[in-house]
Length: 225
Image 1 (spheres, rainbow, N blue to C red):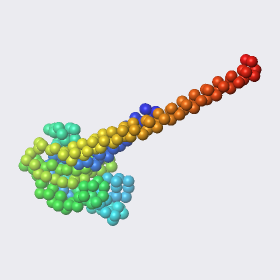
Image 2: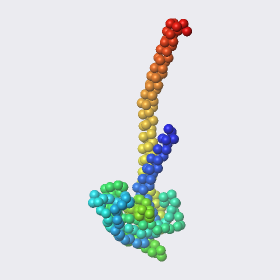
Image 3: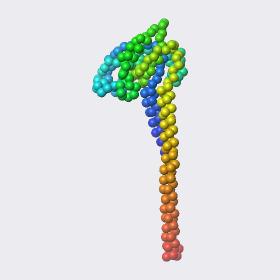
Image 4: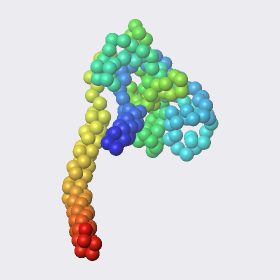
């Protein structure tokens, strides 16, 4: 039973971590090389990787999407440890509106203009930190969605993910609080109830033993054995 319980908890925790990794903001150090707009088909299941900022967008079978092409500085541990290697990364630039995830992004046009202004060449690079959520998957044509871009002085800026730190601190605090409340509730309510039930069963068992003893005595008095 304990193995089943731990397995279920591990699966739930893994699902929540995957959702958090897709939804929480991530920061990449990039050099913008181009921006463009392209019509995308949204008629199959991969539309889950595209934004639906309003009711109308959810009914369209295709629409124009803006993209930002970059050269990205690779890193370890989600950007905490920079590397010298570079790789290409393409971001989509879509509004999220009032829907999930709750970035409340309505400035797609302004962000595209900012990205255009940061275009540069390897000989004269302009570096920027682009904030995004989502994943890049070439098989499913999935692109991370850019939500902000900010110029920086060089390819190794100090980026501290304050929101993610605060998010996990709040989540861990809530989990510890809920765990403490549950333990207190169990000690005050469930454990005494179980103890009362156990005592009641013991009394019933003792009563049954006593009745069996009386029945044996009565039987011996009549049969002599």
